[in-house]
Image 1: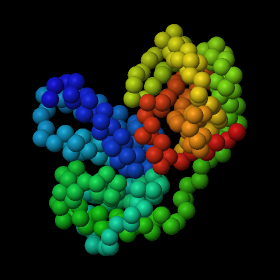
Image 2 (image 1 turned 180 degrees about the horizontal axis):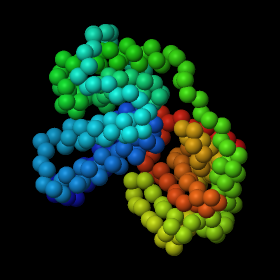
Image 3 (image 1 turned 30 degrees about the vertical axis):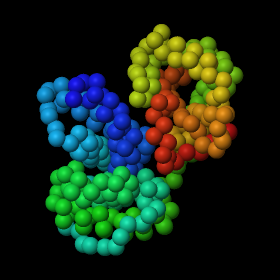
Length: 285
């Protein structure tokens, strides 16, 4: 497999890898962060001459370890041993795919890994054991135990409620959305920090006011998009809707980071529609 074929394979597997990372981390946005880190590690390993028999299994192992590293660093969940002894239970709930990301986060790591790989992504028990580096028996036990626990958790409201958006944050993102709605991209360019960063997720990254400026021109050329103030996983965002579709769900969203009154970073998920699967969002205007 040459370099181009390798990158094509990474792109093809990216949505499946994100489904795994999002549920492992309990967040579609954090899942994308972890996925990007995992793909960088994969590209680096290939450049160093690593050869693998199963690309998909290898990538899931990297994504799995990156997810655990993220959780440990952020102290968002107590990660149990991947060889924890688990008792047998009953069969899977067919609605598991629809369970909230936060519910997945409440499972111990091996249970979470097993349920996601088997019931969300369709992997075998042997493949689970390969990704989690445990025995098939431990993987099967974790799968059964996790299914029962997740079905119970799905009946309980999430403990964590989305925080109210601070008024300064609301004011800044509302102004950003208003300028987009009015097509006043010069006003937005005037808000950019000199060292602003643009991450057009899954497509390109740019640094600096001059390089980021043309990004808004491209938005101005599209007439079917509608913009609204919103919230994704508790973060203020600009929701983007496609007026040629039902308008019931956003087609993508844009995260903005601020440095005082200047825009320090823009993270646009236009080219990463897989991130919207199961995401917790709300329209606020």
